[in-house]
Length: 493
Image (spheres, one colour):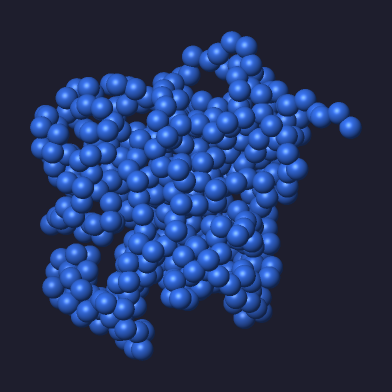
């Protein structure tokens, strides 16, 4: 049988040639904006000039400048991807579609995580084969990171990485029909920093009309820095570079220098008289906003958007177990973290007391993990779920991912990122299964990936993942990893 010709698609910017495989068609490294070089790294994303002829879309794109990042004994390369792959045209998307035809299929746009400093759509976890198999057009996005993406600089627009996502969603609106997608049925979803960015899109006036559904996986609706906090990071970065803290002075600095100063930005005390550090010192970069997204949904598209939102039950384990810090944590370590999260000594002690009362058998390490998980993800997630349910008239669904990875001697548990292989339905892949692999040596529970991935696909189709809407008066989250809630007992009528 003769080999089928590679598929070619005409887009407004020019033609692209992709690859056909068993799940559909893949088109890689399609630019949605002009390359951000020189002073352009600190400017809004500019339209791509387009190209003549047929562009090769069979190979992965460069990635945003980023440092190499490890996670102790846990192999996180499927999550972080290859790191920095230099090249100017990294503001790009990959598209995985059942077929680039005239059909109008649901579209899902994924925003990767990585603490606002690392990650790309080249990570193996984000393969879109299962989505295309199930009739969804998946778009995965690269955006600016670190200093070019999120350092707040006078003379430059704030949150440039978020502006990149708005440009990518504009590209989807204008182009995705050529790939067999429905621009009127777009779901944007993200995890970790990517989920926090999705939460910001819900509050961004510029995002109105660009998507109709959103999924926030382990994000933080209260994770933005205040302008005062951002200013501290900018001043430290400028001092490390030996330049003025303005965009004009940063423009000629090479990306390698921005990466070299990142250790100098670690450990900054960002507590102010009115705000704690929402990232608990784990990253010097975040969104910079005067009002947290969870408190500002009225200004964005949130009231007209269906929302699926949730967290994992042991989020904080990712930051302790791979470093062998779960067992070595002392009472002093626990109180130090509480003080960072609650500068008022009484509130810090109250937080520890409350967690200990709720979890009387926990070790200091387990309590430290619980404090981290609450501060980084759970509190902001609950606040956004409540706010969205109010403003949207109840178009909110909430989940809690409970499956425990057996990695690192069975200790990793339902940590941050563990839900991703189930969302992308690649939990069976051998590169996730070893003692140092994300899911550990044990096989994934039968049917869990189908259930989780199926819920995401169903939500993208019609806004219903398969369980009742979230009711702030009787808050309950659908457990993913255990049995479903009983409708007669748990679902509000």
